[in-house]
Image (tube, rainbow, N blue to C red; front, side):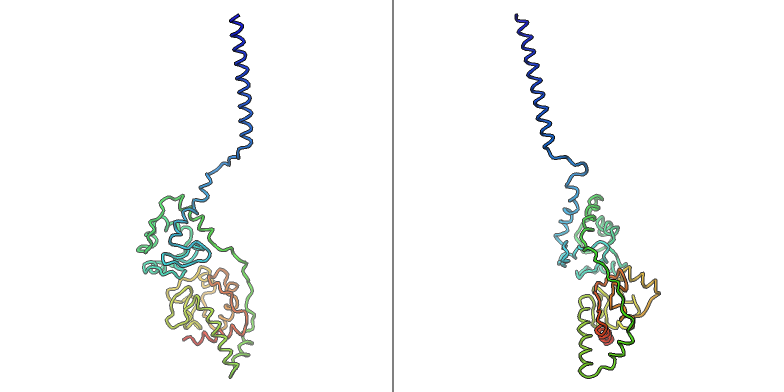
Length: 286
């Protein structure tokens, strides 16, 4: 009798355990179906590593498209492949000496070298940045910096009409009130250049070469100015030229169309008479 009771107890226990196992399996399957799918690959934080590192730069540099120049550092928007020292930030003398002598371009390789050891690239620079020794961190930061740039806009390739002689003859004999108005047009057009060029006899190197004694000057000969790779390629291709009136008339119609890749972002002076007036004014800067 006791043996039958023991057997019955064992059977009941087995049934209960089986039911529990089936119930647990069903709950597990339901949880699996409802749980979010796990994505393979690096942890999500990895994608934001460059952004997080850049936030440390934001203490001294502007990272936005406003390109604000802070007392503590130049803007970093568009820094990749840009000319070193190409902003209005007051760089140290050591920085200007190095970048002026070498015309340093902030390529990815040069930025990686700088981020690894700033003093190696710019000895004596005033930056308090100690560098990033971790190559993965440098790569992540550079990946992020490469996103800080404007979307490229379509380049207008239109060139100046071949009418220099006609326009020149129609304007050269202006006298009296008409002549005065024409000269004022040239002066107003030249004021648009002052954002990047120095028009005074001081001939300072700003974001672009000085325009004092510009007319008749050999191209690419502004002392100490670092010309863009596109400009240097054009110099090599053409074997040089002089900025005479006819050359300026052609170029100033559409600088980007005349020399694709130039850092001169000025749209140009499309009105032929206004462009001729600008050149006439530039001739007075001597």
